[in-house]
Each structure stands twice: as structure tokens, then as C-alpha cells.
Image 1 (cartoon, rainbow, N blue to C red):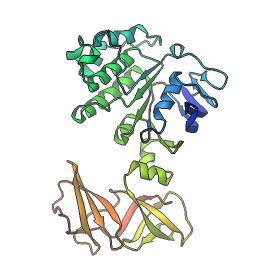
Image 2 (tube, rainbow, N blue to C red; image 1 turned 90 degrees about the horizontal axis):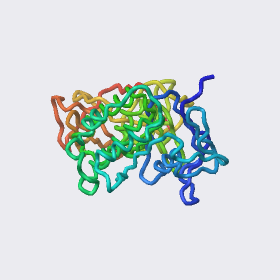
Image 3 (cartoon, rainbow, N blue to C red; image 1 turned 120 degrees about the vertical axis):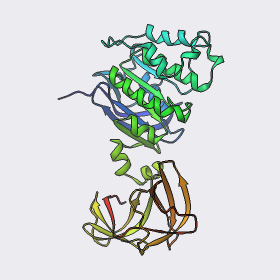
Amino acid sequence: MNKNFFEIINATFKVGGINKVNNVSFSIKNEGDIICLLGPSGIGKTTILRSIAGLEKIDSGTIKLKGKTLSSNKINIEPEDRNISLSFQENSLFPHYTVVENIHLGKERKKSGKKKKININKIIKLLNIGKILNHYPHQISAGEAQRASLARSLVSQPDLLLLDEPLSNVDQSFKEEIQVQLKQLLKDLKITTIIVTHDSYEAFYLGSKCGIIINKQLKQFDDPYNVYHFPNSIEVVNFLNRGILIPAIVTGEDSLENNDLGIIKGNFIKRYPKGSNVKLLLQPEDLEHDDTSNLKLEVVDRKFRGTNFIYTLKTNSNLLIPVFVHSHHIHQHEVDEKFGIKRPINIDHIVCF
């Protein structure tokens, strides 16, 4: 039986005696894997990281790394003995050391014995902090401090790296470039990483698995594709905010009907008896634009996203439906115009609740 590199088993995470997240279980199978934890602010994501690092104790459940129990109701390995590095969202640099001195502190605490040596200069270039190396923390911006802290964590090459909103203070124009290089670097060095973020796009790109934390529970832990296309609860749908739920009636093994859109066909993820009243998840890419269609809906909003538009359409029953269209489509519609929806409507995978 293969052992997981890291696992949490039925753990409840608390702060000040108050439960933040209950009965959490998930695992990281292989060394070097990256997972992301998503959830609204204040839900307990950071508390989970602090508990994994040993800064908070758990009363129930177990946290294991490389087969060794780090935390349980009887065991609590001290933080300095875990070989885990936690990079906080806020500035955690030592104020009396320069940026470069802070980074080298990470190198000094390296304990992992990983064979592949890390190139500090490469990390400095990746994070674009070369110009601030001789500055002190009070002389740099919040984004620069966050990147310097990340550099310090990376050079320590821990068994497990914990990143709390690592790119939240980074400019959007620079963020995507860092994401690409950071992911490649973590993979090259085989640094197992847990990233906390509220940015679903960031989580879907960086993580091989994503966990969604809502209402004190880990609601779903799955591949990013499955989390997006096959959400397992209405709470996950609402949190991701990538579509709407519309009323429909199941009319057959591969079809259902909505009063405004008519018959919709596709493959049901979960079977429902004919005649069942359900809520159908409709995502922006599920409907196709077709000006020749006899199904026309009113445009009430249009968002330009560079590569695409998201049109918001109003149905006869006042449902507001988002529709994705590439920005180069020939006929761009203005607000109050009619927008055609291609018929018959086919959805690859039908998700209902």
C-alpha cells in the first residue's frame, strides 16, 4: 500500500477555542505536488496552514508528513522540528536585516537534504527583487516584502512549503509571469506546496488538486477541472460564481426543459427520474451565440475581458444568464439589443441539484 507524502485525517482546526474548519481530511500523494485551498476571507484557510506548521494545536484528528505524525490530540512536534516553511501574507521579514540577509536566513535553516541545489540568483530574478536586496523591510512596498518572504521560504527547500496568498500584493501584469515560473521552479525542485488563495484562476493553474472551504467545511477536494465543471454542491457553485442555477424539469435520460430556453440535451452527471424538478448549472460557455436563431434574449450587460465578452442576457421570466463570446465575433451586441442563442441547446455535462 502506497503511503501519502502528506495527509490530514479528520482534523478540526481552532483559533482561541473557536472551531474554524471541522473534520477535514485530504492528502498529497507525491512529493513535489502542489495543492490549493480556496475559500472566502476569514473562513479558516490560514488557520489550517498555521496548524500544519505547528503554530496552532489540534484537539482531534491527525496531521502526517512523510509517514510521521506531526500533530494529534497527543502529539505536537515543535515548529522548528517539522522542516515546514510558512510564508505569511503579511510582511514577516526581520526588520533589522536587509532583504538579501533575510533571504540567506532561509538558506541557513535548510534541513531537507534535497540533492538538487537551489539557485538563489534565479529566485531573485524570478521574483524581480534584485533592486531591493540592500534595502530594509521598512524601505520596500508590501508587494516587494511579500516576494522577499517567498524567496526566503523557497531557498530553505523545506519538505513542505505553505504559502498564504503569496501573490496577493503583486501587480496583475507581473502576477501571471510569476505564476508560470513559480510553478516550474516548485516542480523542478520537487517542493511539495500548499497554497492558500481566494483567486480561483490562480488555484486552477497552480494546483493539481483544489480544496474548497465554505461554512467551516472542506466542501470539495478534487482536480481543478472537476471542481469547475462538476461542483458537488450549490455552495461551491455560488462561491466560484462561474454560472447560474436555473429551474428545469427532467424530460428524459439525456434531456431537460426550461421554460425560457426550451429543451436542453446532454449527459447527466447524476441521474434523476423523469419529471424531477431540478436546478441546472448553466455556465457562460454552455450557450452559443447565433443571430439566426429564433431564441432571442435581451442584452442587459456586456463585460469586455480582452480575449472575450461576457454578455448578460435577460429571459422572459427575468433570469439573468451569462454567455461567453470570443472578442473577435463579427456582430457585437449593445445593451438592450436582442442576442440569439443557438438551438438545439447541447451541454456536454449536465450538472443539477
